[in-house]
Amino acid sequence: APLDGQVDRAMANVFAVLRTAGGTPENIVRVTVYIAGVENWPAFNVRYAEIMGSLKPARTVVPVPALHHGYLVEVDAIAILKS
Image (cartoon, rainbow, N blue to C red; front, side):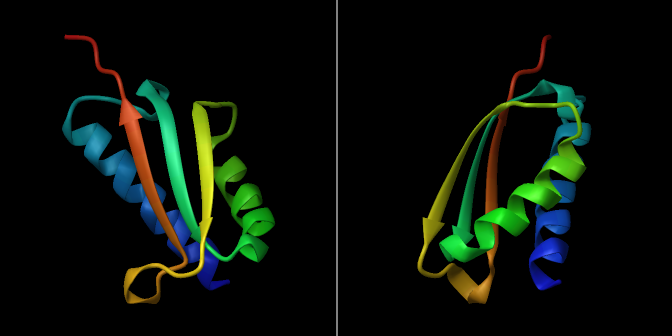
């Protein structure tokens, strides 16, 4: 499904930024997700849970009518890295 592919890409991008900064998914403490259409929320939850596994950072999902360029999902994450 298009949503699954977009969730995969968005989370892969988050993980790539983390790796570049020397972190891992375990460093994520907060995730905000903007999702086009509340009807996509259940499918998003399933794919997100598959990707995150046992990790459960604080999360907010914000249903919106539309996202830029017709995307279905946008992810913003905050991670804490120890120096």
